[in-house]
Length: 304
Image (tube, rainbow, N blue to C red; front, top):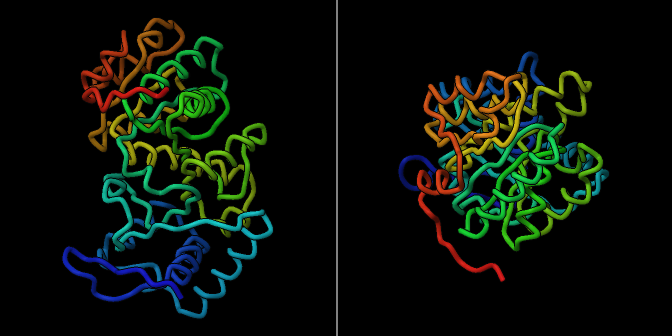
């Protein structure tokens, strides 16, 4: 059994089993009324706890076996987890209001240690919006930033694809479990990111499988909160007043991350959110220099 060092503010205090913690975390999500908020509050009440402190070993091991069976059926043969209280969990994720205790991932986890910026926006993006997303992704890659997005149709897919085509790196934070492809049209892109880049999911496999689509839609805005925490800043390319992207905008400000809004958003007369967020500290982007002046230029190198 692979063991990880359990960490506190100082040295390791005891080993943990990734498989058992996976099963215990999944068990917590199967409890009545479990949400990211209620689970985060439970761990906040005991800051040194790991999931297995709340779940019996037998229950945790049974759920772990069930998860592994489901993932194998979904074609997932290789994946990893990242658990709070162990040395490989990113401290920056604790900036989320209700931070997740465990993540699933596929691909190169070390990309999460890069300088990262989110490029996000509407699923029903205009052609011009997709063009702008691609342009921004290429500019970020040229300065060695990793492009992060949510693998949705529209702005997200355009940003991921442009980063890859430019020879850069990208991270997708998805709103479904690993091995689930939504939207279906992005399956090839998701597989490529999982193999060559980094795919992250905070969605519990068993809870997702046990409920219907309306309930599972709630995982999508929650992943935006984690996406913001993972990055130095969020760039919103295009979004309506009711877009889930605004969840990430609120999270970015709450987490003291940079929030960038393209000038084109301010010029639309059918939305009001850009002015609202600008008053709260968002940066209006008229040219790319506005982004890099706020972030620092990064490490500008050739991607030939």
